[in-house]
Length: 570
Image 1 (tube, rainbow, N blue to C red):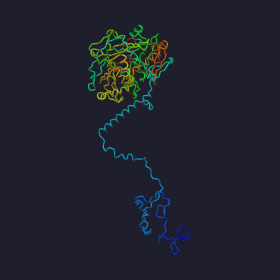
Image 2 (tube, one colour; image 1 turned 180 degrees about the vertical axis):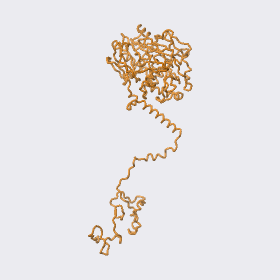
Image 3 (spheres, rainbow, N blue to C red; image 1 turned 45 degrees about the vertical axis):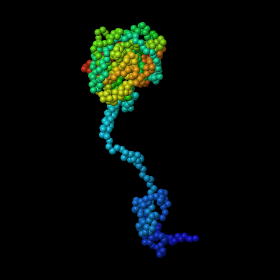
Image 4 (cartoon, one colour; image 1 turned 90 degrees about the vertical axis):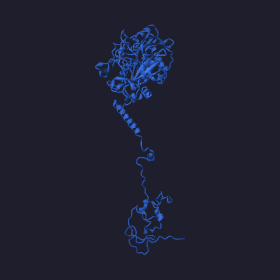
């Protein structure tokens, strides 16, 4: 057995390390090179490789073992370290580093770097120009949107605060409230109505307006000499006569019925006065009611300015829309004196005065075995088709500022008329549904919709007609998802509820904030001349717009009772 000799280990009494002088002629370290002085060293200095017990990633079989980064520690050419006897083993030496590898500062970037070469090197200039223009339009709408906001935390239309159409008095007694969700589930089929009487006179429709386009627009004329009448049911002499003859149980007008039929689509507050007299029921509107005006952008998500003196406020636009509709309904007629006179003259006009072209059809529907409803419906014109006269209703949509709707009618009506109508259905769903319901109630064969816009967005007195389009009322009702069975189901439910009430006066009010209606019992003298309600503050009272020094009584005079006439003036 071969022994193992450690050799002589000299003792250094002066400190650590080997002594400076050795008495023996034999080196105390057999493998230590001779004549190499001892020097202090740091951990990073390479003295020689015996064994590396701390390396965990040492792999002698990996390729590229000669790393040029280790050339500073390459001692294979140094004769004092064996003259390169262990060159291969020495070149595989790696400095042990305990530091963790650096992490990327912002996460992995290989996705973007790998796809960088796939991006197009050059983009189409036209596409870039369209994008820049779209960004400008979006920024402009954002500026208008934020400029019209009154509160920083209430940007959406749903958060806007609407006022009730009538001041609820403390002595009024609320009897019931009905959510709109119950209206949408109602359905009632009703037979075809019968005409009891037709009054007034109408003029033929001018077919040349069907060829109107934005390129050959027509200026909207003003008909200051023609009188318009908006009389409630109880002040209508014909309805009073029919009630005395016991022709029906329920009496109303087409505007009131359409408001009830389209109630689930309404956003603004409205109110209807209900009078139970004996076994009869009368649906009326108040003097000064909002039912005589036309809402604008009622169902839009874009908020309108709340300052009532602004020409684009909800009230100002309602007055402007009613003014436009009155004048439009008279301009598109052939005014050559060739009128169709019905059985009786206009029941609200005085003898000799000029009245608007309108025919009043008093129609009766059978609601139940012993319950009938009579309503006064309006048609504005007629057309001769195959020797037969077809009744028409005439209404006008009005554009006040393309920046609110996002669709410029002058540019889109020729090429994208469907997109313009879709935008109007979104922003004015309730108004279009009410017009359709009125056309169905009146038995009109066609409803004409005009597209009227301002000459300039800041000029609300001068307008032009851009186009006129005709629709069949029942087909159009199907397009806008207006179900006639649901319409009559709502009316039937309201009538049944009111017939259970005792004799007296009631008011049906649409809640200004919630989708529901409330029924209040009110005093018998409510809304009469001697009934004093709490007046609004003077700064909140709205005055009609003024032009050329004349105060426009226009649409505010729509609310005439007992034969008051309304002139189509602004």
